[in-house]
Image (cartoon, rainbow, N blue to C red):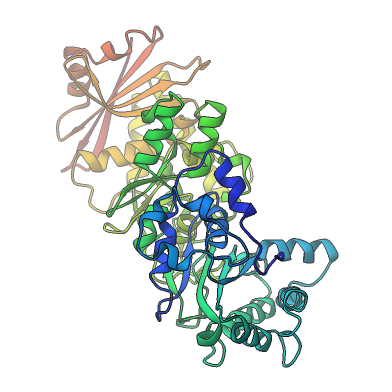
Amino acid sequence: MGIYINSGNSGFQTIVNSEYVDKTGLIRQINDVIGTRENLVCVSRPRRFGKSYAAQMLCAYYDCSCDSHSLFDDKEIAGTEGYQAHLNQYQVINLDISTFLSVAQRKGIPLKEVPDMIVDGLSAELTEIYPDCAGGRGFADGLVRCVEKTERKFVFVIDEWDALIREAKDDAVAQKRYLSLLREWFKSNNFTPKVVAAAYMTGILPIKKDGSQSAISDFMEYSILNPGGFAEYTGFTEKDVRNLCKKYEMSFEEAKKWYDGYDFSEIGAVYNPYSVMCAVKFREFQSYWRKTSAAESLMTYINMDFDGMQEIILRLISGEEIEVDTDNFENDFETFRSRDDVLTLLIHLGYLTWDRKEKTARIPNEEIKAEFQKILKGRTVNRKWMELIGHSQKLVEDTISGNAEAVAKAIEEIRDTQYAPTFYNNEQALRYVIKFAYIAAMDQYLKVEELPSGKGIADVVYLPKRKSMLPAMVVELKWDKSSGGAIKQMRDRNYPAVLKDYGGEIVMVGINYHSKAKTHTCKIERI
């Protein structure tokens, strides 16, 4: 066994020895394409969604240098056709590209030399394991001879395949040399059919585009935008999370609120596996995102100078779904032509979840919302962003102090900006504007929409967070009626009843929009 060639099953053994949720069904997806023209697979998903676990699982299953029956005989894959036929039947090349980057950075080696480092490492190991196959016309030729001698083709498992693309985002030479190496392996009529039984590449980004085409066009791609048959193995399913919560006697509803991320029509909700496992391990629902290397700096993308980018982010924070055109994204970290490209990257990074049918994005859960809300306190944003936050903070202050005229005027100003919905024609559109206007309140308030209260349902309620000395705010919205009527409705239907255990002051806010006059009015009462 080697480090890169036939590395054995010890990595997956340690995974199985811990709390393990069975995702071995993924293996069948690869078994089904071995020996077909679809045997090159690239699966991309956000960090901490189990990519490395899947890579180690595949290595353990296919590696002919070990016996992995004890690891898989009691798993889902054992009940599938082809289980025995493929188990431990192939040579395996296992590469973690981020490891080569770490070595290069530690030794001060230019990133453009990393492809040569990869080939040199593999060549040295091939010489050690199969001395009769090495030498000759290079590494590729050595693999061909190895297959001829052993009568076993290779399964390539490449983890963090896009690490070099991400790290060398400003180094076109490094990217080109790396993509050329992948072409040499997976797009060569003289090599690929003879040597490659299957290839499984996984990373954050789909394969980088080269002009109008994918740089390695023969790969079947399954991104977070369209995972196809790999959807069930993208993360934990709702069933997985329910079982874990039952085992550890924890609230499934809280787990769903904190970690429910993507939703695929074929299988339903998919959860962040890393965060779920941290929650059951530490017996606490909180954000574990910031404790990983998962987070690129949000500020980098929010501050990009695309028209309306700051407003879009605030709309997302306020709870809206935003239409996004994902088709033109170049699958890299440096080519941004529009705010749609930036938002598409945030989907791939796991900051936003994607509704493929509606073609909309939103912030998925409380864990990620916490990352966005941190930027409300930041000072590293551009001037326009600070102005937006400043206006919202002033609005909250005017609301609490009872300055109804100033509140109405502030909402008018927001309605006149590019933020406002294109079709401002109903109470729901007004609600979008209100949530956006009060975005600064999210730092000290918990926002609840359509909260049952008394004999009715309050449109938007802002509950002070723990230790806050601010009053609660109950907002009722009207369309072509009156702000005074909104206050009367709150009193008549006893909306404050829902806050009977709150014990502090309550600010009731009635807001009405006159569609003919195109003006807002506001009335505020404090109880």
